[in-house]
Image (cartoon, rainbow, N blue to C red; front, top):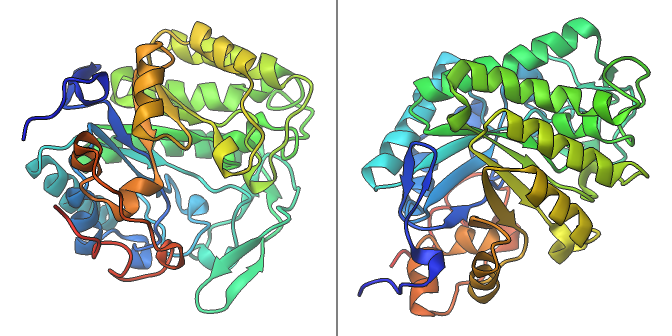
Length: 361
């Protein structure tokens, strides 16, 4: 059966890449990488979902300090690169395009999840008021972070650039910098976690500096057309909160990032999950300041995705949870078929149940 000619299912380009449709599989933490190394099970999972125009992987640590959650992958060691090569080979064999999301957890971390010698770091020594899962002990209070020194900041920034290079070595088509959801880059943007008085905090220009520099260095290492970035204005996850400069900050950030010529800006609106709605003024400022490909994300179904693409609100649309339980989501949406609901109890558990055992086709 041929796909309908609606905009959502039409091919498009992303820099040097051709995407077979405008659906993006959003990055979603799955906690299946034992020893922080993705294996055959991870390769099967992503290959099953290669019908997406673009896959963005789960959050993947650029450095050892970023491995704050149990069983999340990294992309900085030889073993991790080899593991990811199995994934990218499988996705490419299935006709897919895949970016790795680089996620340094920052203060959203527990020391027990980190390898020896790694530390829980954040712009300021402000503890996250949430629990973090630790194997086998269960939920534990987050570890109080160490306020990053200039040397720590330099090391983290180089970590993003190095991980970007290793991602290309692993066969990825590009990287997405996770500057959303209260992780390290977002922690620099937000006054809830950044109370520095040096050049990395305080003013809008100072708070966006880390995000812009991480993007600049990654782009310099692998090419701007291979680097995207994800942001979450008004996101409340991991203790984030808006401040009076919130809208000005995101407008400035969009302009600075656009000047770098990055592959895309991925904007998350988590209002469908209970977070404050991203205001129309912020969306308009981001859309105006950003000159490249714009990815919409946040509780989309086919009808709303089609409408927003037609209205020019974005160029691609990310779908999250529907992809978990519907590996063939693109085909189902195209056919108007019923979707399989996800099993929430298996979102973050090890093994194939609720991961690779959903029916395909």
